[in-house]
Amino acid sequence: MRHLDFDGYASKWGLTDFYEDAELILRDTIESGDDFDTGWFGCKKEIRYARYERNEGGFHITVEAHMDDLWDGEGLIYDTLSDLDIDGEVSDEIIDEVRAIAMEVGIDDVTCVFAELPRDASFDDVVRETEKAENEAESNNEDMFRRLCDIVNDIIERENGNQQFAQTEQ
Image (tube, rainbow, N blue to C red; front, side, top):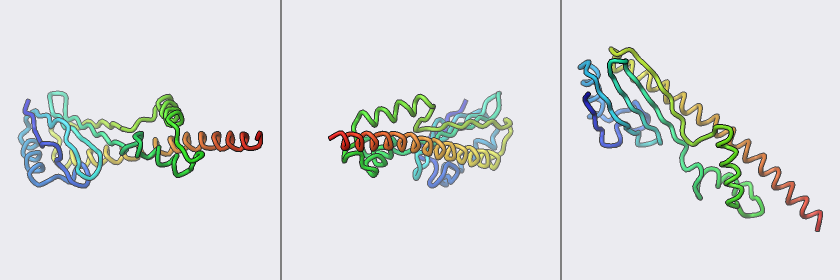
């Protein structure tokens, strides 16, 4: 099986907006009819990756879309909690609670979508199927993020209620 190496990024704005040299290599390889594996290649603008593999079982496409910096100290969840100001501080305990609930309900910071095509798929077929998989992965990430925001909002309401309760107790 031939292994293609795009040396990291093969595309610019989306997974199918190939750099010219990567597109030529991929077109030639697909048209050759030979078995191949691209390994993981990325997109420079978005945190997305794809992998193409053709073997006796057909043409396999895998697309991964990541949500950028979801959990780290400058990430989306931290920023969201900070913007909503829970007593001026975002505690590690609250971040850990959000993460635990997210994991419990199947929310992650990456979506993986698989597609299968016939072994003799054309370059254009591969591009179309990759775009569909990329759109599905992005939509899945948006759904997960909305669900995660609901979790964050529930915790904030609880924390604000606790703060109001603590203030009335004093």
